[in-house]
Length: 101
Length: 362
Ligand SMILES: Cc1cc2nc3c(=O)[nH]c(=O)nc-3n(C[C@H](O)[C@H](O)[C@H](O)COP(=O)(O)OP(=O)(O)OC[C@H]3O[C@@H](n4cnc5c(N)ncnc54)[C@H](O)[C@@H]3O)c2cc1C
Ligand code: FES
Image (cartoon, rainbow over all chains, first blue to last red):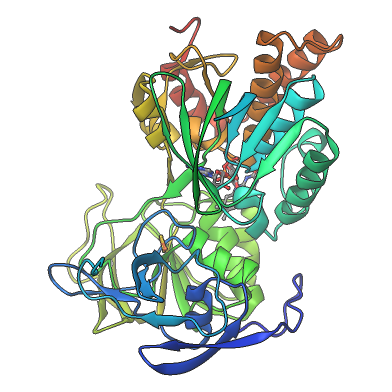
């Protein structure tokens, strides 16, 4: 969900773009981190851990912890908490360490 | 190879002040920041700061960030790189940087490291479930990006960050289920704790989290009461249904570059973990490396700004850029820092500093 009313901050209406998560179409604000767009769409599971396949989400949101790795436009291990969203991005949940071709 | 007199790594309050003061003294500075905006932690802080006028007390963190950013762009002599991650510092003095995705190298005469800190987590079963965040992450999501982290959140930790972020969650429209604090009393700012209590947010002192529940995402947590030895009391368990858990249990300095460069490090729990040994001018045991801000010990933005100023002025002076007012400005900054650390809340910080600030280093 996005914040609509806030006593201190204003969030002006911004350009929405469409991207896909595992093939499903989702809208987000151009330039915001992919993780913010996913959270706004109520999607919190971003990947599964390598060995025990446990669900993982956002933890630090500033690129410090690597909890949020996903495959973006075919490239694995992207920290989606700091990767800006662009129209048409193909975002996928990453299983394991990700394949580097 | 890029040449510059001073490389400042990190553009939070410490790095910005260091770059500004070094450049104002006449040095050429390259300021690199890995994020796509400057300001470090300040940009997400919507609350008014405490402290004294000299460190912008009474202003909101995000407004202080804007002032410092504008100031840095007004000073000639500073080159600013955003989306620039410093990757390594090598024995021959070469620094490797990934700037806008391109690899480059620099050979600065002096380096000021101001990389800040990263959030700590806590050990309890299921602490990796999606929906469990560091307090800074929650702030970033809601205050920078305008996105709500959850509908109902429990906060762990009633220090300054815990009470401030809990209040900011209320402002954003999130229900705060309570604050859990292991100590018998609230450690954070009274004003914020009082505001929370007026909003009916329960503060569970002498309590801690036992485990988190949930399948693919967080659904609830079990907390229990602690005895005077901080051990959980059997039978006191309580389930709280929440879809968000926020950990405000401290920060640890982001010191990788210092380790890699071979600076001598020492553990000081009071300062958040391992920090570099340094002298009162912020010089580490490495001839060319200085530090400022949370990376040299987790404190507050006010102290980070003054440390940045000290490091900036001093490093510029070492390179021969000494303003007429150097001695006066430097001494004023030193007394400001001493004043910031004089209150009862700073006893812990001072104990930590006494272990790592040396008369003379290297
Ligand atoms: C919730 C909260 C509330 C707070 N409230 C207050 C308050 O009321 N008053 C107060 O005085 N302080 C407060 N603080 C503390 C204050 O924000 C910090 O102490 C201060 O921001 C530290 O400044 P810094 O410049 O050392 O680090 P930071 O602000 O963390 O900046 C470090 C910068 O370095 C960058 N960086 C890191 N590694 C690299 C690299 N390898 N290459 C390039 N760049 C890099 C980071 O992206 C970041 O921008 C609060 C903090 C939090 C989290
Ligand atoms: S959430 Fe920590 S790196 Fe993305």
